[in-house]
Image (cartoon, rainbow, N blue to C red):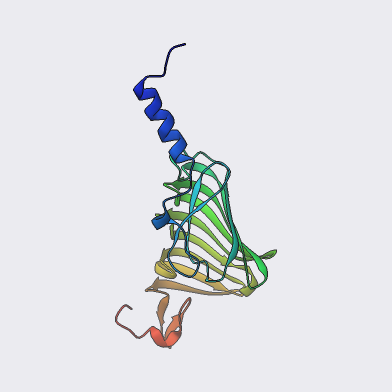
Length: 194
């Protein structure tokens, strides 16, 4: 029997290491830092953030490849948890790079069976940057640019049939009567960033 060569052993060691959990410093902390959640089965890692403190039963799954630990390429990722006695989920379908949403995709956030938010469009480094945001329960649809948590740049908001469009600045739109705000209090619109 021939013994494996050093390069073969190095590759095997790398594959075994990739299937483990993410480094402690890069793991998600509910109520704190965003980080990786491992699927537990195949060693795939998905980036998640915005999960409140007290969340329990955090699980992840990924249907695509994950050659080095983080999810990579096309697939469907799910991060699920329990919060305030109810089931919650973030479901992403599309391209991933280094475990983060990257490129064309669709993110659906649910509470129980209710769809709270759908973001469909372009993602960069896990952040939604442009496309369509829908809040079904509130009857709101926004299409256009997005920055962090706010409409940014040219965009169109439809609120129960009423259309408001223009150049948004951090969730604020200047209208003849003053400011129209979406995603932040109107009193914050008369600030330095608008």
